[in-house]
Every structure is written in structure tokens, then in C-alpha cells.
Amino acid sequence: MRAIEDFTLKELIPQRPPFVMIDRLVSCDMLTTVTEFEVRKDNVFVAEGRFSASGLMENMAQTCAARIGYINLCRGEKVKIGVIGAVSNFEVLCTPKVGEHIVTTVKVIEELFQITLANAVIRCGDETIAQANMKIASTNMELQE
Image (tube, rainbow, N blue to C red; front, top):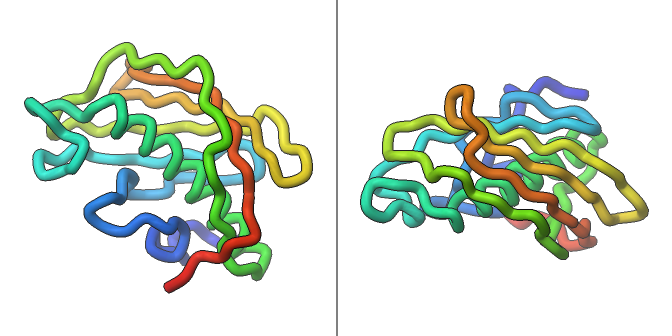
């Protein structure tokens, strides 16, 4: 696979500012994807100085999207858009404050045809602050520039 640094987020995910909820793809292979994000006060999901549960869910989804985009580009394919088919066991233990950095790890549990079952965990420092299981369906729709 090509180096992560070879790609910009714009190439990997369909979301555009101000709706981008990841700052950097840290690592990615077929089973595990890691992203980083700093909570900023002007973020659309920040209220009363905290990043909302909806923002945490979107961060998980965009980490999954970055995985699909990275794998597609490394294979020499166009980036395919994925859609969330289901979310289960979504748990928010704490919402991060403005200025805090979160690290999101998505681990593939199973892939069958074009469906990926994954577990997502968001950490802030040493603390797990959110987690969920997600079912992502890959589509034939391609990312448009």
C-alpha cells in the first residue's frame, strides 16, 4: 500500500468543511484504521464547549470512510462511498472539550461481500470516551471532486 502521507483527506472522504470531523489518517491496513481530531470551538458539533455525541458518531463514520478511501486508492481504484447500515451499542462515556484531541480506532470484525462490520473506539488521552459497532455498506457510487 502507498504511504498515508501521499493522500489528503479531500481525496479519501466525501465530506467537506465545515463537516470534516477527522484531521489526519494516522494508520490504516485491512483490519485497523486510526484517525486523530482536535475539537475546535467553531465546530458545528460543539455546544457549550463540548463536542457532542452526534459529532463523535460522525467522527467514527468518517474514520470508516477514510479506510475505504485509502484502500480504494491504494488498489488504484476510484474512492467508493460507503453508507452506515446500522449502529449498535453506541455508548458515550464522556464528551471531549474544546482543545482536546481524540484518537479514533476502527477495527474490522468481519467483511462479507460489500458489508463491513466494525468496532469503533474513541479515546481522549488514556480514557475511552465513546464506542460503537457499525455496519457499513460499500456502494458503487464514486467520490466526485
